[in-house]
Image 1 (cartoon, rainbow, N blue to C red):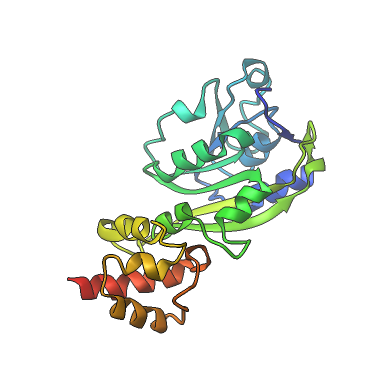
Image 2: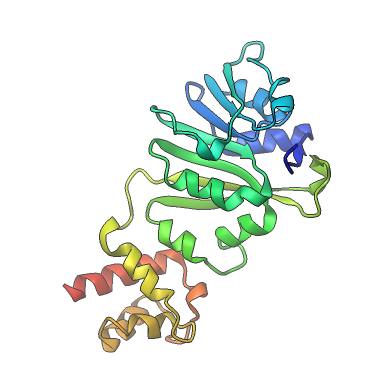
Amino acid sequence: MYGQNLLTAPDAVRRLVDAAQLEPRGVVVEVGAGRGHVTAALAQRCRRVIAYEVDPALAAALPAGVPGGGDVTVRVADFLASAPPAEPFTVVGNIPYALTSAVVDWCLHAPGLTGATLLTQLEYARKRTGDYGRWTRLTILTWPWWDWRLAGRVPRAAFRPVPRVDGGILRLTRRPVPLAPARGWEPFVDLGFGGVGGSLHASLSRRFDPRRVSAAFRAVRLAPDTPVGLVWPEQWLTLFRLLHARAR
């Protein structure tokens, strides 16, 4: 099974598919279809499912559709090497934990992707969505274009074989209108995470007038010694607008 823990509990399958908020006429790409538990549930909710399963033995047992449901196209191939569909689509999958970062990166760079609902390790989902009270560089870097949400938890007992950790439902949704311009945002975030004692204020002051950085921090009610990981995405956006406008 190529290291994958299959999601078999019907309630957990339903929660994953519910979290995806599928359009009945939409197209869904499934990552790691396994024995088809999630595949069948997806086919009942949408027009077409493109199911990727790299294990030929598992792929051979996948359905071509379900009664009253949409069509299922099974592809015995590596999802990470695939090209995105030409039409708008979503991604859903109980993904192998070892490939989480690669799958997320594929999704973030796929034209036409409107959203992704991925069952990952709970720790990863919490980390990327700020559930620990801290925010990572990847989340901040992509926040103007993608909304990151923890959409639920799945106990380890819902999988076979049973993994050592619980799962988390990570929901990525493309924003209809970006919250910041592409030009300037990445350098700004890189500068902020560049590391001057872990302080965002100190890092930004390397490029911007420290007095203006202090004024921007007061505007978003941040103490100058706030660690960079504790700065919320909305505060990043306001700092960017204030400092970027004044830097011109």
